[in-house]
Amino acid sequence: MATDHYDVIIIGTGAGGGTLAYRLAPSGKRILILERGAYLSREKANWSAKEVYQNERYHTTEMWFDKEHKPFRPQTGYWVGGNTKVYGAALLRLREKDFETVVHEGGISPAWPLTYADFAPYYDQAEALYHVHGNRGEDPTEPATAGGFPHPAVSYEPRMAQIADGLTQQGLHPFHLPLGIKLNEVDRALSSCIRCDTCDGFPCLVQAKADAEMDGMRPALQHANVTLKTEAQVLRLLTSPSGRVVTGVEVLETAGTTTYSAAIVVVACGAINSAALLLKSANDRHPHGLANSSDQVGRHFMKHLTTALVALTTTPNPAVYQKTIAVSDFYWGAPDFPYPLGLVQNTGNVLKDMLPAEAPALLAPLVKLAPGIILEEIAQFTTGWWMQTEDLPDPANRVYWRDDQLHLDYTPNNTKARDLLLQRWIEILKRLDQAEHLLPFGIYPRTLIPLQAVGHQCGTCRFGVDPATSVLDLHCRTHDLDNLYVVDGSFFPSSAAVNPTLTIIANALRVGDHLLERLT
Image 1 (tube, rainbow, N blue to C red):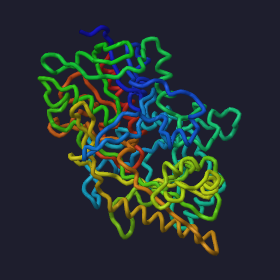
Image 2: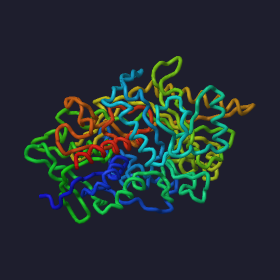
Image 3: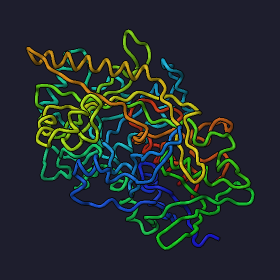
Image 4: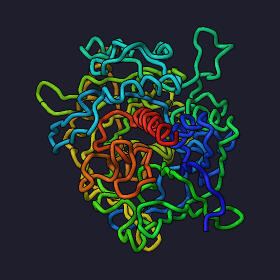
């Protein structure tokens, strides 16, 4: 029996759930937000590369299982704000063409049931809410917009400006990466952000990253009608005898198990955990999991094909905050390859204590044995690059729940495009190095990001107009249950090749407007 009834229950506080809470909070409706984690502690370890990268201090210790049924520890965290607490804050819009059918070398990226125009006003709102810094007109693939970014682009430090100039001289169009940080470069005394070297992948000790806790949950909790319960893990959803309505949310709290109910229930646990929750909530009316009459829940999981590359050259890189450059010249292909390749952007700074944990195969023998002072020297001559290529929706790439365990079956596809993008970028960096030195020296070790990295997860509950081929309708309500919504990266029909977070935020605002109408 439900012990307490609300107008809305939101499960999860990340980019989807936290933003939706922000949108619904002023309505006056009684809202309960359930977060399985706690608040992430503000502590010196927030800025410790050893703690963050080597010890994985802020990742869950639970184990998931891969397609060979081998356990692995996912690089995901359960906190108020979700994974935005440690994301790199790169907030880009999908391109207009990303919403259309796109032919790739490895297959087809399907059209979305809505267009860029449907999302455009919500992208505007998302950029304002999450303090996005950027500069319109530099990115040759950027979609149409009504105005500029809410804040000016984060400036290039001298070495990064030198690199951008070198890329321009090669005929490329480097642009300032859109970033969600609370930085005031005109008056640093008024800036929350101090432009430190521990941002990408780190929690922000000074709370200057635009994340779902600071910009979604905290404003929402200013409203007396909003209640947040932390360390409250949802075990399953209960339904009416007809199976058409969610009647209860069973929650494991520190004091025991409680059941809550609401007129509307929103699942926003992230694409992997949202699918898992629906699947493990199976009952007589829904024997294969809730909202799964189409057998699509958990399927078409995507996470991007991502590659991290370290450029180690003879030119020192003293940049404190180097994650500022992006290149989209190969987004839709190249003259000799008429298929999309992907996006290139900087990573955060490569720090000495990151190297033992993140070392690509070519550097691993060196860094595993090198003393700290040597690693410090190596780090001073590095620039980090991150390449992401679209992986294509495949029903065999899926989340499923078996024997009380979360399984994640994933086989990369569209890998030729990924490999070509990496090859092209290494060639570009070599030319850059050659232009700067009479006797060039460059090493470009790289690593393909493994299954454990699930920061760009999407696609497990795709939205669409046909209940036979999709889980959600155009408002992200499940086709099968009248009061159940999913508002996170699950709804993506395709992954595109830009970071998904801004689209998740924009969609949460869009769905929020629909829910406000429904609650009236």
